Image (cartoon, rainbow, N blue to C red; front, side, top):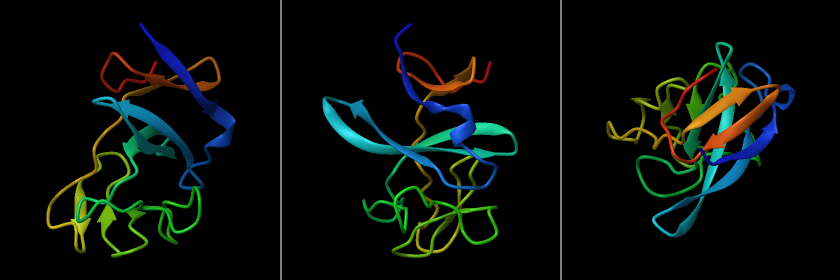
Length: 119
């Protein structure tokens, strides 16, 4: 399986700053990010469900002030960090696109051939 390092596990603090990276989708390099929520790592394409703008209001800042929701800096749309599901705002029910990652041996890795898993 082809796994590419994204960051060290310790870089992701619960409900805190995320790490930006890129992923190839259909031959195009797409911006993505990974965050930690409820002890698990979750990764998404860095694209609002409403229109294709990046979510973070400063590089790596994806959570709202409570640390409970991912927020689009442009529209204020809220997303569940563990599900990517639209929870309110201008996302009109459109969630975030998941990126498969795993956390292993103190690192977060892009799991390019598989689905999202933790182990």
